Length: 421
Image (spheres, rainbow, N blue to C red):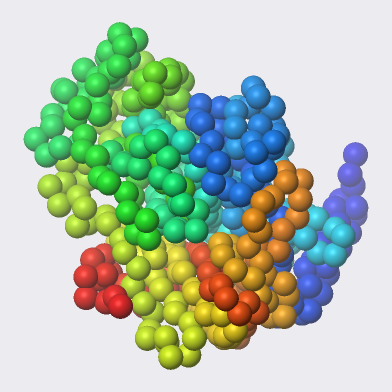
């Protein structure tokens, strides 16, 4: 049994290692790749994971179709490994979870405001990569998830060109319902769960996915993500309810519909239908209220780099996460100052970040460490991070996502119409 004294010593050890590393790197923690399988989906093969390692967790666990970034959120998978979904910090030859680093170092890593309100890093991002579409599903709101002791999940999408050289089988996403759809129609779909295809997509509308664009999706909105590889900044939760019972001939178990609903409601069809935010699902201006395209932070093209907002907007009046895409031209350098901590992934090119190696790998083995992912502290972000592209031919492209209420200057929904070049 670990004693209190031993726990304090372990905490002190982690804290001192983190602080020494932050001092050495100017506020950076290098992260190891975090792979997550899904038993009910087929991998899209665009994560740069070696083909021999797609089923590294075992065939029974399903293929690896997700890579999570700067995550302190456990994956909600059956039979999961104890640390599944948790990012690891790499300091010299040692590794420990980012969750442990945040627990021990608090505001030093994520900033005083976020630490005081949440006592954790409350967001994460991922690459979500599938061969075909996934079931029409929703993520519970904070109020709904609290009924089962969990947190709700708003999320966002960006489709990076570097991971979408092919669109795979169905690059379209159904979202919400057609205006005029009734609750009784949806209720009938749920009631027909065991009678073949329940037909819920007949009530919805599919949008063709555009590489280099994205969406902001509130909780309680149905969506059936298509087959583009997606960068997904989101709230730190893995709750969902699948409302479609058959996808490409594959059964979706009833258990995946009700897994994050109170057990007493698992057969209550009216309760299940009422989990949906009806006004948002039948919004006649759905695209206008949820579609995103990049918005430049400033016109810095003459300086050899461009920083763009790729995720912005608010969910029910709250800014819960934002994201940017930085492109540094060959042979150029950019010093980027931000208002808060962030997780980053390099998706193209090679160079340095605060003199540390930063490279986008061509192929990754399941157990290999990479030099493409970092967590940047609030102090480090505010002081400025230096990104240097050491290539003479290829741009260096970095995606980074931020926590809640960090970027009050972020654009409003629809800003891309007037702010692009």
